[in-house]
Amino acid sequence: MRRRQLMQGAAALAAAGAVGAEEALLPQVSAGRLERLVLEDAQLGDRPVDVWLPPGYRGDRPHAVLYMHDGQMLFDARHTWNRQAWAVDAVAAPLIAEGTLRDFIVVGLHNHAGQRHAEFFPQACWPAVEQTAAGQRYLAGQLKHPPLSDAYLHSLVHVLKPRIDARYATDPRPASTFLMGSSMGGLISLYGLCEYPEVFGGAAALSTHWIGLYERNAEIPGALRAYLERKLPAPGSHRLYLDRGTIGLDALYDEAQARVDALLAERGHRPPLTQSRVFEGADHTEQHWAQRLALPLRALLARQEAAAA
Image 1: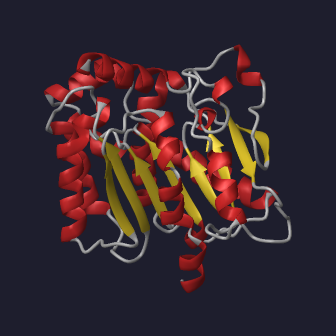
Image 2: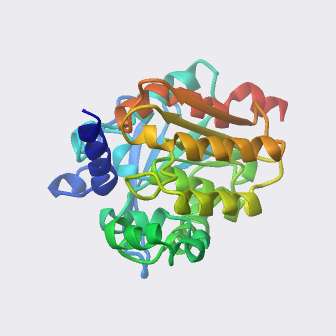
């Protein structure tokens, strides 16, 4: 049973967002509306970007912006490789309507499945990992290419964000600009926050894939923690949400997540701005991320806290 769960999780990491003939079709949403842009990038390749506008979206009222990775997995399970989705529209719309969350839009960047690990693994950590046994296994197995995450973030920050702010009614300030992702998407969300703290006011990382490989190792999580030790924003300045489940691949994150939690505590990162949660029985799937999505949304976008700030 455990081996099957791990293999299913590995397949999810490898195939997340794999594209097929359905990609040309716009996903359907149950609330609000979706628009598709194309982010052109000569180095990484062009990618679709799905922008979700909540019900009642108005061009004369500024909205916060949540940039989410693996954009093809966010809205419509009929369009995803595993027939699961985050159901972002279904979760977010009622919370906005009832006043729990601020007005916000979601910008979902599709991944390039073949280079997803390379685009999402924090590039600044690679020199500490590259020559280790775990790093060599990672390069040969999942990474397949030296990291491209600096280029990915540059494209998001310097090309896509100005375009989003020009096209939609947004509040472009850091206090209204956030990142969210799961698994490898959790890593790139944290990396984006640390590399561009003047752009992003917070990040949510669900089921963060600290181990890189599909097995426990010390080298990759150690390099990631050392990077965070150098680059974490000052406590009290940004919002940070972390979580993990306890079965499948998520069961392998316990040691690494505990070390990161200890680092956050040592540095003075405390609730409510910083949260780290464990969900018993939760697996490494979009279905489970959807079930708890309201929590990271509240952590980043709660209306009451925004008003107090």
